[in-house]
Image (spheres, rainbow, N blue to C red):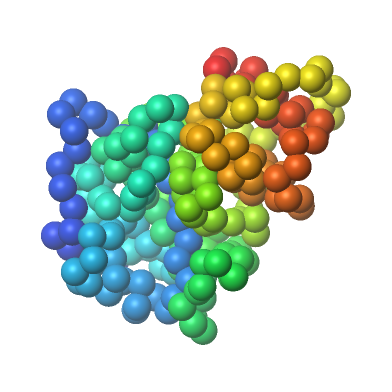
Length: 231
């Protein structure tokens, strides 16, 4: 694993009593690395993260893993709303050119050297905290409609090949008709805005088409994941 550069900050809190991290949340941040580090460590805004990985593969550690960083914001997974207490957050810095407009810009692409560093870091974190592949998520998974990162150009297939994500690996049978909203909720999504939840799901599991259509392929992928995770 690349050398980890420590840039400590006091922008963190304590996890809820007795709570250990069980989720790993991947973010992306579209600004030069120096600006990202300033935002996450020195800027008075209440935003921080455990790690930042630059587009060149440098790993910066800012908040100790046993502490509660402020990276998830208003979010939810499987009905739990204090995601900061139950997760470790990793930011991927993806632009040296400008600050991204989240409404217009698609995060990424993410260079191989950055993905290599992410894989090694995720393996180490998961080993320490016993985090399973189904619990490695994107920011958009826990905040559908509000966040889109790491986006449809993030390489979930690479993580799956390393045992760090769940993706269907064989042709899926045509599923029977069913309540897509119920399946999304069973997997973990906040479905108060069903369309946003479908788009977030597709950004993770069917990146070539994130239109939000409730088609049979989306239902097949979702059913496979629900069955695989025992939800």
